[in-house]
Structures are given as structure tokens and as C-alpha cells.
Length: 413
Image 1 (cartoon, helix red, strand yellow):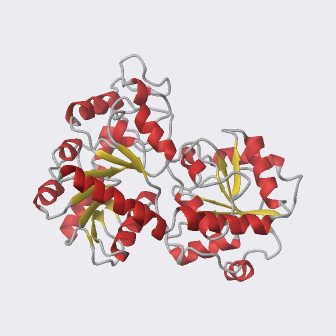
Image 2: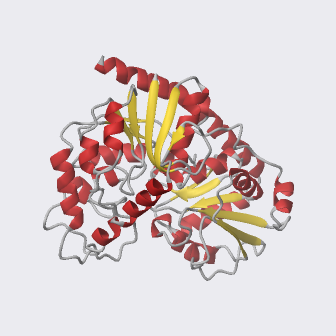
Image 3: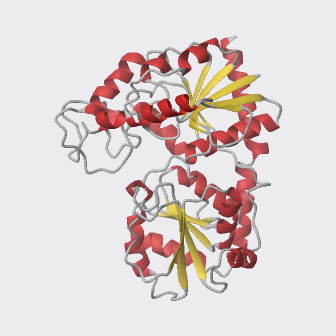
């Protein structure tokens, strides 16, 4: 069996990292797997990207060409938008390949146009890493247009553009996506969103979580980890990490400023670790000391950070899965998150952390206190590791992928 994955990058961002793990899992089990990318950063010989500097330059320019289109959208909602209208070099190669299955992942950044997706002739699977496939240009929906349909009279009050680019793009998808594609969803929340969507509610969808290599993402000694990172040995350390740092409002960092007001009276010896952002980030006005590691691309470093923390907080308001939460649990660090997103599949309430009521800052703070002051904290740590081993390990998820791919090929033979 030969699988070719299409992904904008191989390791940049959560979607790329999740794709890479699927590829590694398949390859480790004897499946001929490769990834085709626009941006290659790793040295994996089975990941194929632009080979010349000219190709790299044009790929970079293609990404920037979407910005003038996005300027048509005037909104006070933060979030990425992708027109996906430019033709690429990939379609001809895809249809001429000897792949048994083409597996699409996060293919925005003008990697593939909507039209090109509709013209792929190979057996096709599409993993949804965000809501873009059934929305307009937006990657996450903050209203119900994706389920109602993008009508003239239901544009969000937060959008002020004369030209409704989200409605325009959604209509392009309606026109071109005539043949349903097999969808893979990493969480039950995303599966429910697909089933509610006006565009893809009748498309076949299967829920399979993202896998993780538990031999790599494992707990390290907490004292040693803190010493290596120059973190206080006796303080209770709360960890927050997200691509985009504190600026991505979807990640819910602004929730913490209010939530932390409930914490300072419970324990003065609490500090905050942050990774994933940069020096442009604006931090909340809290009494906690902040240890900032900014952008971290080294997995060993991330493993050490997870192991050093007492608790990982993931206050996302919209989240398809939650890779950082999965990594934290695998390193034996409990997680506090809001219930009602893909994180509900990862965190087991009061067994591997705490699922707060959406979107109560008080209950989120109560969850943090419940974990940090729990007399059975060691058991929470062990439960966290065990849950990942039982549900998300390569061994467990590979069997699901093997059955899925075999059934797909059998259905079209």
C-alpha cells in the first residue's frame, strides 16, 4: 500500500506535526508513506518539497499573494483566512502518481486551490485540521453560517466588508465540491461540526485521533527538568503553550487574566511558563512570574518543559484536537481545558485533569486549583500517561488507520 500525504509543511505548526506523526506511524509499520510539502524543514528522505531556490521563492510568494484578497475582509474577529484560488504544481503530479491513496491534510497557504482539490482523480482522504473545508475563507467559524449556509442576510455583525468574501468562497466550494470525499476527523467535536455543516453534512466521515509516539513523549524527572531550564524547584508551575502565543484569541489566553485573579489568594507560590509566542505578545496583568521560552521547535526541549510543569492549561474556545494537551498528558502532566471542543476527547474530567464549563473563568480557575492542590496529584500524573498509552499510541491508532485504508480500497475496487 502506498500513501501520499499532502501538507503545507512537514513540522511547522500543529497540523504539520500531526501529519508527520501519521506518516512516521505508517512507515514504522511497513506502509510506504511519503509527504509532499510546500515548505520542508526536516531531513526525512520520504518528505518531498521544493528542490531549488526558485521553487522555494515562488512558494513563498504564493502565500503572500493571498493577503490582497484577505484585505477585502474587514472584521474585528481574529483568525486566519485562506482564499485558495491559485493553481499549483501539484495536481498533475498527484494524478500521475502511483499512490493507492492521496491523503490531504492542511493544504492552505495556496498549496492547492479549491478547483484542484475537486480535480484529483486518485482515491482521496482528507483529514480536517480546522473548519476551513466547510466554511468560507475562515479557518474557524465564530457563527453558524457554516451550518445555515452563507446567505446574504446572515453575515456576522463583526464583519464590515462591502464584499462578502466568505460567502463568495463558500459558493465556490458548493459549485466545485460535487463528489463527496472521505473525511477523517481527529475528534468527536469536529465530526459533529462536519455533520452539522451545510456543505458536507452528507459526506462520509470517520473519527480517528491523532497518534503520538509514547516512547518519545514520556515523563522526565521533574527536578532535573526544572534545573535544566533554570526554573524554580519548589514553585508550582503552570504551563501555557500555543502557536501564535497570546495573540491568537481562539486560544483563549485573555481568559487567564480573569481566571488568575481567583488564584493569587489560593497559593502565592505559583508561576507561569509560556512557549509558542514571541516578543510581540502582550501578557495579562497578573501577579505571577512568567518564564517565557518563546518559539520552541525542538521536541526534546518541549518534552523537558512539559515534564517540568505541574499542570498544562489549554483555554481554547475552538479546538479541533489539542496536540499540546496530548503531549503534556503523555509526559505525565495533567491538563485543564474547557469542555465542548476536541479537547474533551483528550482530557478525562477529574482523572487526567479538569474540563471547565465553557467559558467560565471561575470554573477554569477552580480546575487549576483542583489539580494543584489535589492530594492524589501523583495519581493524576500516572492517569495522564496511561490515557495517552491506551487511546493515542502508535500501536493503537495504527490499527485504526490500517482498517480504515483497507476498507476504503475495498469499497472502490
